[in-house]
Image (cartoon, rainbow, N blue to C red; front, side, top):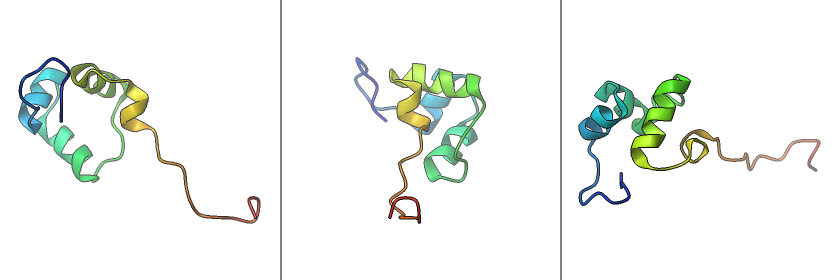
Length: 70
């Protein structure tokens, strides 16, 4: 987990401190056990990482074809 301008990458614990949340929150998000979090926590994580909120929490488009796409 890189941070612009920071010499060392974040660990789960250091990102949790920077985002003012529990390390378990970061761990669950990284492992995919949780796919979302409350808006304020998401904003703090994005701010700590120096990226846009959408870069962290927007779902990838589906590659499944359905009847409407042919």
